[in-house]
Length: 395
Image (cartoon, rainbow, N blue to C red; front, side, top):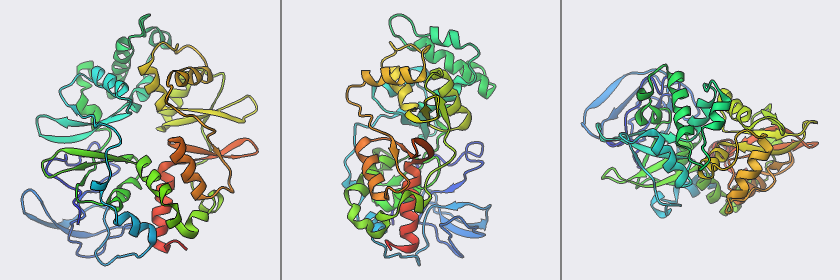
């Protein structure tokens, strides 16, 4: 069976995973009951890959990321995912990895230059990957910036974002109650845990990780400890869409029937400032918000991707409305496609899968009478399809 723990993967840090402890090894010898759907496990035994020492003892309630050997569902979607090895998937783009000794400012610039929102960070001292640097953290730091005017002015006439990122890192230091030099790449990376699979894993192993909140991408590692691929939620969505006939009746479930998504929808008015939109995202720990007109009708959305586009093309002013900002940064990104983000409550999961895959977006808004009533994310769709398939099949 594919391994999810590696001597090259950092063990969970208590301060980082205090509220989301996970078990990384599907090779666990489960001595009582593994409850994949979130129930408690009182005792379990496992063998350490690195030391060969057996451990057996009481543990706190945890979310188990593997199934018991006795649970062998015959559902078509699960079987399909189990039939595909992660080794069969070519990397979508060259893999960017960062070293813990790198300057955070320069690391964020690398994310923008490589057109990615996050990258794994390798700790040179422990020789392990410890997490991901994510561009979303810059949005969180905006909340702690005391002067919006100074922040807007931090992008100089030449379009250099060095001072802009430095101001946000200074604000981040205030958030952590640390001196600026205390905000290292290591401390930033530990905000986003590193959960990996081995090169002998299947897409089923990846899906089991991606159904958990906060896990948006899963690195694939070989036995030498090298990352050979990173499989994202978008990759799973694209795969499911290309095999949508295997969904059966499940693909005909409507958004209304599945009750997928989150409500109410957080939104900003088109005339609000872009910094107000980013602050709303940061305070609520979300990656995107709806943009509505004065009557509350959905007209657009903005997300962390727009901040990444800004870092790529900082000629756009931060002192303009959120609608004008998103329009301008997206016009500069000639390869991007920004279709309508809305779906109806009566739309099927197969339709939603197709729209997410074609548009390469991370969320869609459920619209009723021109108003967004809920938002459906990649996590929502993957979790619903996988869990329903696991329990009920494709009925």
